[in-house]
Image (tube, rainbow, N blue to C red):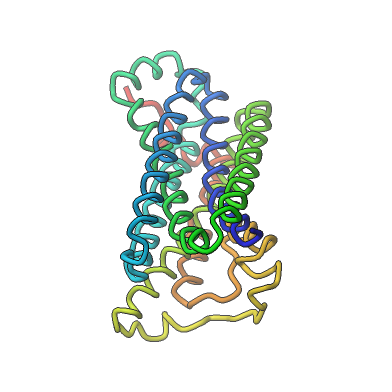
Length: 286
């Protein structure tokens, strides 16, 4: 049951972090009414994930390992794009929201922001939901009750974490909230970018494609898989979600991870610490 709990916690924590930040963001920008659209997306993702779980349960064994690798790599990359766009929007436009919000709410509704928010909530949660299904179905075949209990506990812990982020985020200064949440999202997205590269490398390897030195291990910490500090352990899994931590990484994964941090951390810090440098980008269009 512990293994199933860790899997559900690890997958759910990422979705919970992003969902909590989005909800707090909407509340801080006087868009509390829009939070229901995020919940519609989240709820839809949960339902679809459940349907997928039943489907995979019925045809278990037909989902190839190669197919799972490809899906996880592409889904992680899509999540990076979604999160990065949110980071950029918060950094470049967030500071002006209080002054522009009344007008923007009306304009946003006319331009279909409702579906955008539903889609955002869906993508963030479904990616993790689908991966959880792939990971947990093999456990469920041999220990259905233990898997169900572990998964529910892991998801419950993630929901509590999201609630805490929502409560804390909704109470702090708007600018500070944007600043801190942007940095947190950068750490999450960098880890996801590296993870997507890792999955795509594995997919190419099982296809028989030699990627050369970029697919070789840049390091291996030698931490055993049964250790709590392994990236699949109860402690390591949290760091894996928060910071992209892994016991071993390929060169391509390390380079992509570092490149993302090098690009977006200085950019975000400069936007908030030296806003005058970006006045042209943040200036309201007329």
